[in-house]
Amino acid sequence: MRKSLSLFRRVTYSLILFPFALGTLISPSFGKDESKKSPASQEDLVLYEGIGATYICFARKLDIEFQKASVVAAVTYVNVIEGKHDGKIKVAGDRKFTRKELLTAAEAQLVPAAVRYCPDEVPDKVKKQVKKYLKKVKEASKKK
Image (cartoon, rainbow, N blue to C red; front, side, top):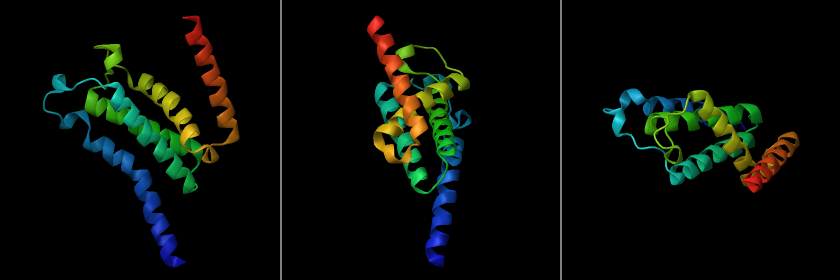
């Protein structure tokens, strides 16, 4: 029992600290020439979404609160976009997004992805909010 508790603590601390370490490793200060950073492609965004949603799912299995797990996943997502792509996304051209814009977009992507990947780990209230949000998005896209 003591061994499993020790392992649980190590895994939990690693899980919590990993995104911050990752953000530090890929921070823009490590890049030699930021102008050479390419904007995030759709494939990049799908990969980062999958990583973020998986993080949320795994953290929830370790009984980390949903809100904390989703915030850490979103911050990690933003750190990667800023560090690897200088805050730019290919479909937006040369526009560099602010950290706040990226965080909003990350949450809008990662939470619905977590609902798809591990619905049992997402609180019912959040699932209802996601369903309502996706319905609005669908209706808005029909109007265009």
